[in-house]
Image (cartoon, rainbow, N blue to C red; front, side, top):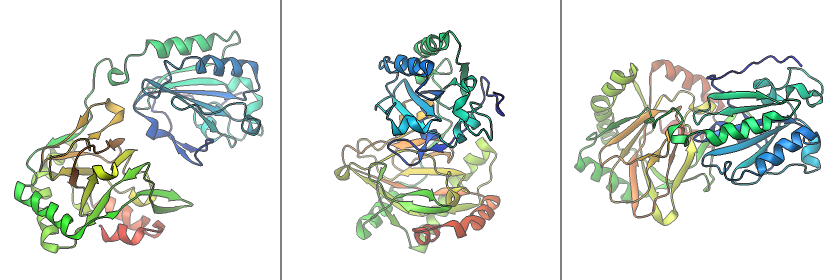
Length: 374
């Protein structure tokens, strides 16, 4: 079967969202940070597909969600209804791609095919590195030699942190001394005097960007600063001490700031934020850079990490900032002791401000608070 897409080594893999047995919309790109093996097997009723899936499930030592994760892609509704395959966590998950959107994006099904799973020639493996770039594309072979090739390749791959041949640092800025100690204490006191409210994360549902709360994904309390003098002080310091570094390194001229909050990650609540990106919804598409300024350092855990670039985590000193593109996958580890206080704005420019204004009507529940934070 001729397909419309031909992925090759080095290509960035398409990101997508698709249904699994446990999630109505699994966001594939947040699985980055390990090797990802996608098997477009069409239907588990076929002997070749069954042999491939059995061989992969026999290698729990490889597919452990640390070195690698396996994603099977089914085009056959009977695979779900007859329970031919099932997720096994860690390591193994299946997408129900019955509309063939994922298969078409990866070149495993032709656009417009009435019954895409009827053609075995479309079956293939796609192996991705921790940044979701293609390592190899291996078609199903008549003698089933593809199965051994894939397993041998994954076995020989280096640890994810050295996928490039050596450890690669995350493309971030670490800037000490952005806020003075006295100002850090002032912001912490502001939080303590007002308290914080549970805040969720932005998610698109039916064309609207909503503020969702899910403690398994994020647990944090925020105080939205209203004192104009304090807001003006943060603006001035970001303009003097952060914007010039972004201009020097990224040739990006910051003109706008979104959100003036003091956030608190409390060990008493096992506060954390699982891997995510900051600009993937309609209502957040304008965000360009995230700034994470620690206001204290007497806590354990609560460090920022960037899974696509290894397991290293970052804890800026009190008053110091970690600055990074909103497109980078990042997470905040669970706070184990004490409280982590942080000032967490987003930066953008005039061109992005037009995007924000255009997308404003798509903000759903939680939008009023979102606008207030701008």
